[in-house]
Image (tube, rainbow, N blue to C red):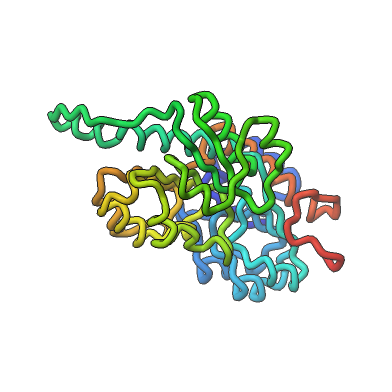
Length: 321
């Protein structure tokens, strides 16, 4: 069997234990040498004669899937699968699996790091001090502030736990919210409108789909508390970045932390001109622990599917698969 492996954290020299497991299954492995997610046109020739595919953040479109007749399984390295055309994969009989919850601690901790960075303006103060300035800019304490979490899945729960350590009041919005979990951990169940109206800090942990794209638009930003902080470590596209730029400029939004962008990597973003914006390169899952665990999970999912064994993490399961 031939397998394509594209995640940058699962290339030769990285996560060797997981790759050793895969090599025991097959030694016919192809790697992504670009150091970035692959485009549609780059994927097709690489996948053309592959049986399996461990996918990073590549764009796995209908054209890709219908062009690769030999492909039998896609294993996403990570929880999100919005860049995979799930419906087409299902119609082609290609199971798609993911690794839910494996990187939750890493992403949740980065989200709270961005919240702290915005609240105390750490990147701005670091830069100004390094260039000889002495700007002791006034920040914001988190104790007693309202944190609104949009999406109370595995990552959102890590952020809630961190916030409770800072004695923040936590509210959560999620269409599929676990009310018993909220009651046990003193998290207020909120509607979308209530959350954006009352939160001092908002952290996004939602999938990107038709209902969440530009969920945080100009209208939503205008309903937020003046000076609120907004963090997104889930998927770019949930925030309308143009609207966010205007809200930051006019003071409606107090700060923005992004680990995900509408275009990745972002190029010439107006947001980069602003001191109250903190950005990271979609690195939430990149800790030693998370990359190791995701690598093993993604490899095992692929081997299970290609071996005909049960895989509990198939996201487009059907009777025909």
